[in-house]
Length: 78
Image: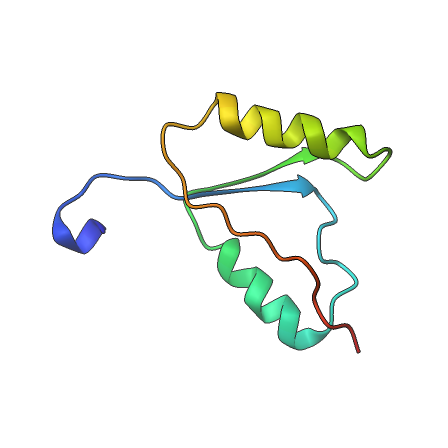
């Protein structure tokens, strides 16, 4: 988009700081691509309770002008 003259910033906001830490090397490489953006942050340090997912999603809905949301339902671990 930037190459086409649009002014935008890319951000990745993970649920947890340790998101994906136990993934295999192949999946770690994919995750690294999501960290090569203008802004990277985590909503929580670590998982504590299911309510964090609700609060995380609510925060994104209330504080985003426009977004593409990518969800990884299940990654194969080896």
